[in-house]
Image (tube, rainbow over all chains, first blue to last red):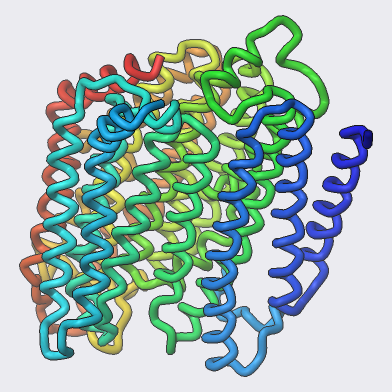
Length: 100
Length: 487
């Protein structure tokens, strides 16, 4: 049986990769994918904990979380499309109308 | 849990069900009605739904129940917060009727999104489990992303939406990761079971638990726009349509605070030393930094965004005070939000009033000579500014006094001192609006026309701002009852 530590290590790695990606990537689609990676790291954690403590709540949370992520993807891509129509590109550095 | 139980539980959910049904019906109505039917009817229909939900909310006052296997609570605390959220939504809809006409973006889904977002916030206010909290949070957030980018042809609106979306999702990811760690340690997502797990001997230490707690605080910090996680907020506020800004400056913040008040002082009380310390530092830097940014803004909308950040800092002082005396601390936060929301919605309402065709009315210069152009609007704006500043006889004074008193009582003298100093500094930018209105000549002579809907919203908000300052007794009673329900 695989010990829970391995699951936690994988999820921590996924989370870190996602975090770095969000900060480094300049294309909005890539940033969005990295955000999904972070969310899924959390989901993996939930399922692992749920399995090892034989408590079902974590898996329920994961199902809701996946559903919400799908809804979020729809809205996010719609926003990206309207950005592209108005500006012609989706590079994050180009969005600087609003500034202090 | 049997079927009969399920049905009775559903009855307790009536306010939420009404809001959801109103939203869905409005969606269908907007789709099938011909273009010639005025969208203002849709707004009135949404208002009707909100009022009906508010009536049912009032009827729930005094109940103390856990429904759907402890997913949601129906108690006085939830009722108070739901009323705040419903009133905010109602006022925003009244303001929007004017704004959308001027901006020529009359689309029905606007009201639907406001309703769905309100529904999410109501779920958050009642949530006693991370599952229901997360669903409420995301429903609120997703609706707000769309509302921010509602003017699809406007580049600023687009930019505000994408910034909000990316940072909102980022915050959610951190929040969920934190929740997963807490779940791993405590073995449950339910607040009361987390409380039990944490209060066991040795249950409140460990690296995993503390990491989870810190990530939870960071996630909430992003959602409530606490410095240093506030960078997105002024940009989003400036780009979004003004009524949406008014909505977002109250709704998500208040709902997040409702969850924080249920979680930190109650469920995570065993960890109060740790989170108390973190929140105290966050409160101090939030108030100070937001204040200094607000000083140098040229746009009133942006100034109000920064002032909103600093007000969250003041409310955090009350949350910190709960580490010592839970009742006083919680009451001070509830009173603070009751006062803050009336003044803030009102201030945004005046900006909406100034917004004419081809002129956004957001700059300080747009307020020049408002005292001559429209004495009534100027008077209302002065009341709201004084309340935000905290000068008697407005409600803002009492709210600030309470928060500071709670901090002093909890031996956080330094926090109270920082708060008072910042309250004095904030006089500059709040009174600057008043100076612009009364001591400068108007740039254009046209007098402003109040639409009835906007006037009603402004009068109600001004009335409550003054009423809470002059007769605070009933509101304290309200806060006290809701805190007793919580403890």
